[in-house]
Length: 100
Image 1 (cartoon, helix red, strand yellow):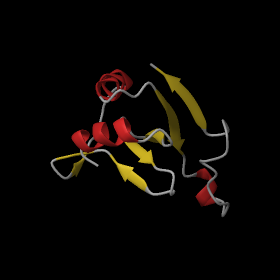
Image 2 (cartoon, one colour):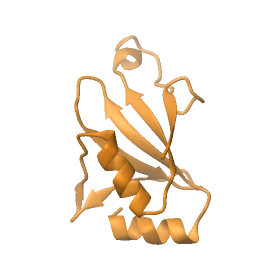
Image 3 (cartoon, one colour):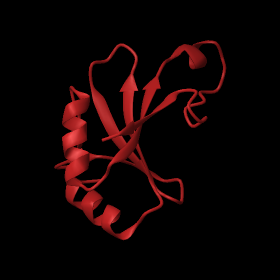
Image 4 (tube, rainbow, N blue to C red):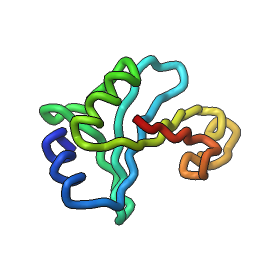
């Protein structure tokens, strides 16, 4: 989802979740929107996934889109390595609320 599409989506919908995705061992972040139907959309720029190096950069971009809440999700390969299903949607077990 391009930034202009995100702004338009936010202006017309109020039931969605924004996730800031971080992978263990990586210094980059990505932003994902999950809509009410459960579909996930990565934030893109000119068709390529947007990568951020700092949370401050994400805060600025999301504020420009009129978004003030998100969840920080840290993906760790541990669950998959031991044969358990990942539980990233469990409340606050792997998600940290962000307010900006």
